[in-house]
Length: 161
Image (cartoon, rainbow, N blue to C red; front, side):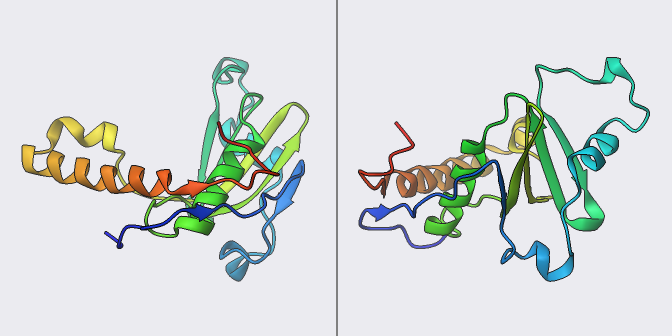
């Protein structure tokens, strides 16, 4: 676990817009373009079966060959992408979040393009962990929450709270 931040950190000015692409992200080191919203929708539901589409639930589509995950729905917001971006910019590895490659509004749905993080979820593994493993994870989470509490917003650009 990285050393804890001892003083308050100011969040950077957030990128704002319905379509933001971070061309300096690692994704563009290996690839030329993010999949379009129509390509993402096709990957989520290749046969366009209406019963597979729940408009009230976010869809999460993985593109393992691109090391890419895309989250989208009409309830997904630009703020989700902004928060992930800001946490990674300021806290680096103190609070591990996927790298955000960009976001795009298409119709009523916001698409957030981010780094694919492979592996099991904590929720899926919790019941199989030993007491010592659970205590260790709780300690790691405590450090992450403490790092998040060190963040301060610019008074002219508040977006949390």
